[in-house]
Length: 111
Image (cartoon, rainbow, N blue to C red):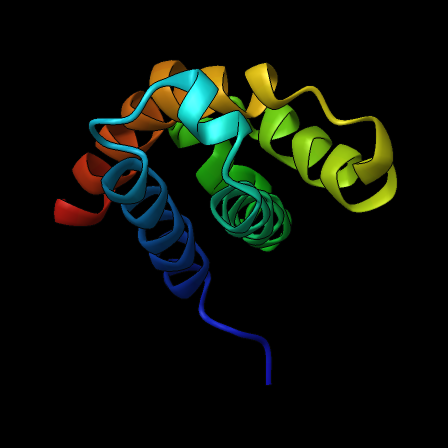
């Protein structure tokens, strides 16, 4: 039985909430120098991208403000080019892109 698409949206929200909470109050340098935190952040980026793949196209279109392709591409980079990751890209994603995505998904789910 296929998984309910709203569960994928909730997975994305859970991962974003973890990322924003656990990186709150720290700097990029602190993030870059904390291997455990970086790896946990990378794993959550993988979860976000993988969950994004499970969201049907019609729902993606309703959430046009969400960069679905970007989330999926980041997942692929983290999973397959892990040895060449630029920590500032992960940091920028967490700080500047994920909060808006979370807001759009929360709004959609509250309808």
